[in-house]
Length: 343
Ligand SMILES: [Zn+2]
Image (tube, rainbow, N blue to C red; front, side, top):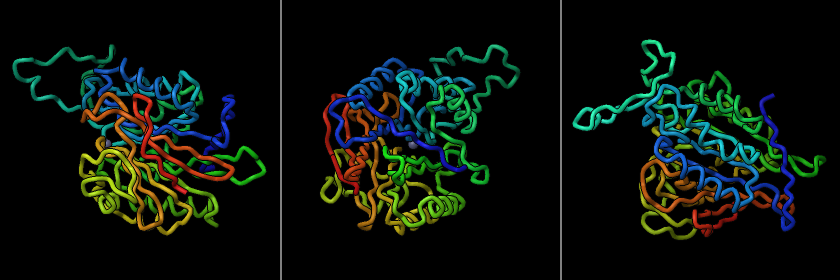
């Protein structure tokens, strides 16, 4: 079986109307060594304010190239723990920093010196090699300690070296009805290999989508970390003006290194409503692409990583009757903006 079912959560909130699922897109909870407490606080805040039913960690969950230990799973677990502690299910995918090798800071070799390193207690000679933690190791450890709340999956081995390739099905609250949506997660590379979605992944997506949704009747949403080159084409030049919707446009799109056909496939499927990416901390817009689907950034959510723009997260709301997919940005102070209807 290729898919993992996402069970529709029955919320107890009395004022829930058509809201069936609400997703929280988190990203860039980086440099955990320095900011564990802050990360916990902001994550809790978002969850309590938005009654989140599901969380997507959209990559760069940790900055492994800054973590001076051999195994980054401990820090990955720390980032996930507020979600797990509240019994909220989640899914993760990989960014370019998650499995990167440790990078020695240059200033450690000058006057400040190299700080004491934290090696495993029973380390052998290469125990402090800081080789980075592989994608497979990170995801295996996440699933093992998730209390069955993680919906992350190790994708097909033939797609190596990309790992976080899988599909989740959002079921209808009425089980006699067809699924409400399909969520596709893809690994856009970076870290231990080039920043691309490979031709093999494109072929995998075509096979999966044609099998699961041959008549295109189920709406489809796509998640990966590094924007494709199509994002460069639709990016606002200076100010964000219609038809784009958003609040910050402070960077150039840092796109994947090559386009191997994924966007062509997506634009030819009328069921694909939007692509969501992270990576650029200073961008939070959604823009239409060829009048066929939306290309959206999340926003810098965590306390690590570059940039000091106000933190926020992208919320995704799927309503079943009438069917509708809405998205907006929720800021750390609770304000919301940049709402757009994706259907
Ligand atoms: Zn990134």
